[in-house]
Amino acid sequence: MNGLTHMISGSLLAAIRPFLAQLPDSFWMPSQASTTAGEVDRVFFVIYWISVFFFAIIVGLMALFVVRYRRRHPGDEAVHGTQHHSVPLEITWTVIPIAVSVVIFVLGFRGYMDMATPPRNAYEIQVTGQKWQWFFTYPNGFVTSELHVPEDRPVKLTMTSEDVIHSLWIPAFRVKKDVVPGRYNHTWFEATEPGTYPLLCTEYCGSGHSDMLTVVTVHPSGTFDQWLQEASNVYDTMPPADAGKLLVQRSGCIQCHNLEGNAGIGPTFKNLYGYTQKLRGGGEVTAEDNYIRRSILEPLADVVLGYEPVMPTYAGKLKDKEITYIITYMKSISDRGGSTEEAAADAPAGDAANANPDAATGTEGH
Image (cartoon, rainbow, N blue to C red; front, top):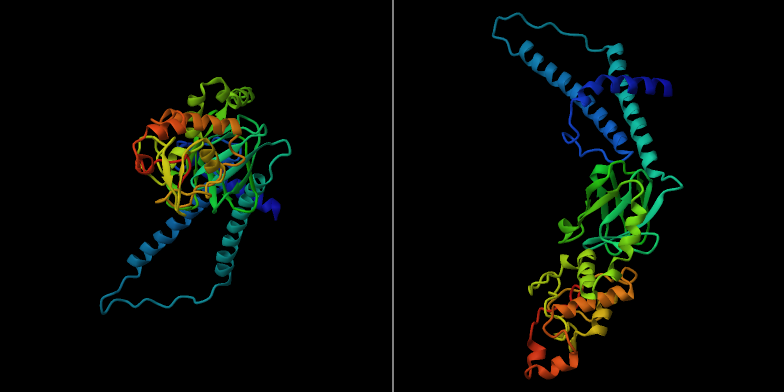
């Protein structure tokens, strides 16, 4: 059976290869940028051209029969009866579909097993999905919101979700895997072409699902380790406020919080520091260093009035010094970025409780 399967699949591929060679990379699929992409495309095109073949035969015969056996006028010669049973014909239309199905199964199963079994020497990256962003944690503890991988080196993704089911999809690598809360899923790939490729979520995960987009950057051979070392220390080489701004951008904060003073899914970051916030549970709190830190690590503790408690925790994703950089940046974009006590003393009576009601703590609903 294996010999017959390989012979049939080989014949089919040989027959359709001239057609495939004439198609540009982007005609049906994105460009192939991983070692498994060709296997996935091969199964797709086998199924496609088999479908085209049978569609042409069936529709062609239907059109022929409509013309050949159309309704006759009275007096025309009657059509004689035909044979009602043919064993060879029944065997033929049973065996051929079975053989085609076996070929498709073998090709698909072989490709699936290759994609489901990562090499033992694969470089492992931890992936966390949450509404509505991705976090990628490298072996040295560095965290980014964009995936960076080396060229020509197997990469294993160990994935989990903080909230609902997400699904990681990298079209150019032909990689797609669900990211499920409470468990780990795995997938792997080996990138073959340096460049930048889209990465997105294909499982509807709420109102911000369409914004859950990022990219994969494939670094040329021999340059990835240097990039990782430099990227891991980049914040320490920048002014604290600039480092905080970069962290806000890379951590996905601006997907829910803007920097211009307008409220979104979460409050704005503009003019946050030093202002008093009213809370959903009653009471109020001044947005100073300790409150901002707590809001980042325990975002559901004190939710700002008027916003939903949808902010995920950043515990384990941001280091203490990185939180300090973010606080420094938030001070720099607030007109009360100096001492909280001095700002409160300078403010007119009642202004602290009412000014900038949409200001935020750097977290959704804060």
